[in-house]
Image (cartoon, rainbow over all chains, first blue to last red; front, side, top):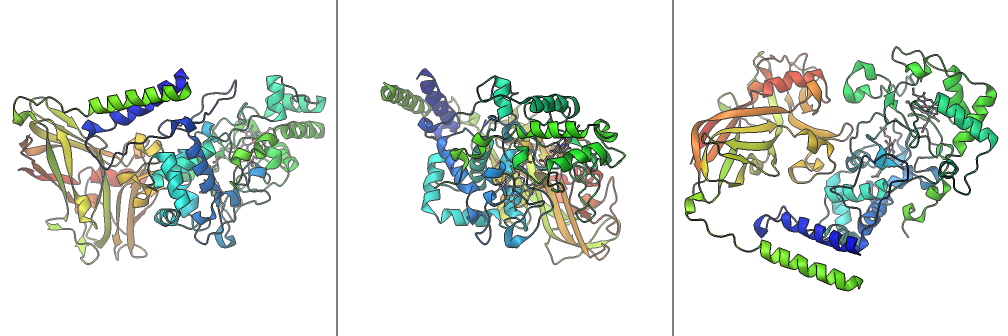
Length: 352
Length: 254
């Protein structure tokens, strides 16, 4: 209770402080978010501090619900057919099952495989090439992309402003019914950054909880994984947030140069972000261009398919040696990373 | 219990609000009250003012060109004075657009009454605002000065035509805020004469940008080889080092 009091007071005082001399200043709005509807974001035990901390975007039930509605709303696309969730499906851990590259408006194809969305608060960059530096700025691209939703931000604002439900949701989330790009993006960020996947069988095993038993084969897979894969796919997030060249040969039709597109540094050619491997069995196909449809295909790549780029990562350069049995064991371990609690979590599903 | 506490806290809040709205005690003399300065931007080509679309110009290299768009960010404006006065504008982010006269001047407010003889500012947007998520106002991405694939602001954008350029178009989108290829330039210019700010005196400062400086020095630009820039990289530095010399102050006074 004391906490609530302190919260109400601080929120209020910050509000007052942002009013210079209490002059009416149109650029400063006194936001009185409904603090009784604040929700919490908790960091799973043993995990590092998240990169996105909701500072400047305090997490509230109203903000989260608004973000959720936006995420599932096809009106964000030109012809009202595509929502964020058309490509990011909950049952596939918010990846696009079975689609090597994205399918947007009018069935237009994108260049890249739709990535999963969860534990996004821990990511230090977004997109396969890391081109987006903050989750709040991430939605601009799919909305404006002619092969995804093909809208302009002003058009989205006009559409949403015609809907009284949205007006009242923006009002309760942000203290007035103004709809602007900043609020749309902050609400989407509240929804997406709240998605935490930490309830796989592997997690229960680590926490020593019931339901956390791993078989002999899975345990052997885990120890092989820690030997051969952890340097890049680092626990507990199963990514170290770095960009690496893991030896994929170039697909000449897509001709995707990767990270160099962002940094212009030749050392970054064909490097891509190390993706998390949580929920990996639910989110095929694999890699930035979705070239592999099975985990077996991925492991065969690491064993025998490494393309000798000049900057291929030394950890995979000579191939990762493993017997057929090892391969199967690693795959059986990877399957323990599926978190059905998350993929069925009603908070993240399409609002009724 | 819960609701009483909420009521109490609301009460405390309202009291705090009320007290913070009390009139500040009147200062002894009116001349010490803070005042304003008006910054006005004039975009020129050489000696004449920039005329979008329908006028031909010639760059240092002798290439003719037109300009269809000329926008830039001015941020973090600071005024300093000979007697130690200093003023830093808060929320200091401005997008100057040649096609929108209302963006070409703005008032800076709450400036301590004093004499000032130097202005500094950034051409572009600081690193923090490039990385801290969704912004609004001048920094709203809908202003068309934001890269969504390599997130961050386009600090300066010039588009137009030149018969020298393959394809006939020139487009320079200067963005990036990191390292040696940052498109941000810190500018510091002495005013031609000191200005005195009081509550009743609002001095004007005229900043004149010469588009020709973009293509002149230290790097002479040849549109036949350098006509398109839409990403970060070495070429950004080439242009940004030039537009570091974009501005002169053509007037400072009442």
